[in-house]
Length: 150
Ligand code: 4NP
Image (cartoon, rainbow, N blue to C red; front, side, top):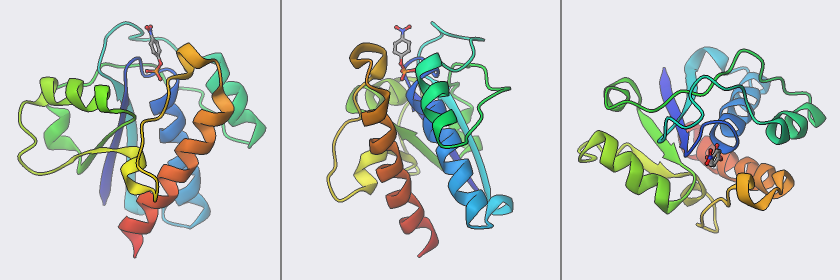
């Protein structure tokens, strides 16, 4: 089983979007039993809050439901629990490393480093553009799955 933790700042916009998009992709490929996928935030600002309305609305357009997901802060122990810890932007990566210490086992990645055009994923909390976020995350998750499955 491959265990993946997606990480953003608040765990209400981008990382839950990535969590539920990848869950949907592996389900459609019949690979559900081979993956454990979760998400967390580097801050505790949104702890316990449901997924942001913008993410919920965008995902509902493509038939994906996020009910039951509530924000949680990433913990140091997540480093041992997961095989891949995937942030959305460079700033997340720095915050993740502050939480886990050193990335001794090379588990920490930026999502769009799995794409052909490595870059940060902008935060829709500030941009209000959940369509761009969705397209970027789909691109990153496709690249990630290609790497894991091939
Ligand atoms: P996210 O977006 O990191 O993609 O979940 C944010 C959510 C909340 C805040 C910032 C970014 N905030 O400042 O509360």
